[in-house]
Image (cartoon, rainbow, N blue to C red; front, side, top):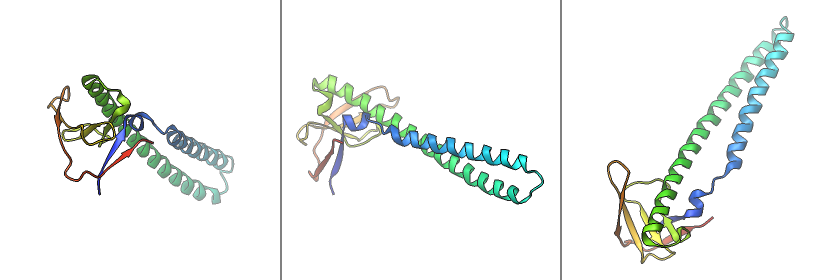
Length: 153
């Protein structure tokens, strides 16, 4: 199995429809809880709807909690991808190439990640990030197994 490299456009393009769907589920869940609460308050004397309200409320709260966790994970992934995009813009400036020619093998910035110029492994660099994450160093490198997959969307 080879190494996968992501294009700059893949790292900067975000799937906003997934976040919109998550927000929609959260809003629908909250509306369902409020609707059942209003219905329950109108029929205080009927105990059969109280159990249904508790059950639906717990299910909706669980669903809302899962969606919020997924939103936070999505935001973290977005921040990490934007950090890699910023690094690629800096490398493009340093190497005097278009940012669209750069590919990174990671969606998070870390020491040891690989950056390649073009769809060739001949101009490949290992990134070394300093301790305070304010600077980097590029070192020319070569893959042991030259099987590479480029993800361009």
